[in-house]
Image (cartoon, rainbow, N blue to C red):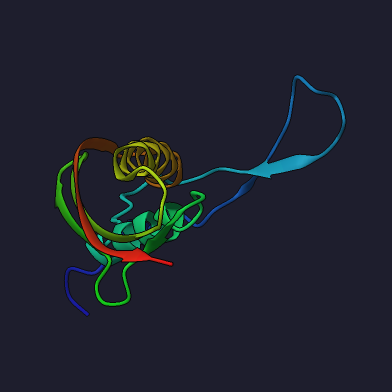
Length: 122
């Protein structure tokens, strides 16, 4: 074929010997690239994290919605709270825990979390 050169093929991952450790082991050079995290993944992580708090559980239908803009996440949660627990305390604990978990799992910054209490459950 005209204009095709064999030296334009991208290099494959090549094991690179560790020179400083002296252990004789090899490591694979990471070529880099982009990682995209879907909003649905963030929603699932947020819903599960909300259910990890005592006295709270994710609502049955669409318990979390996420809006992602670059590295910033805005969340909207729908939760059920066990009666007679303090709704404010449970919501505060859920907000803090969900923020920590989503940031740890995704590496994105959670900027804002709205919480809707859907039901008090006995």
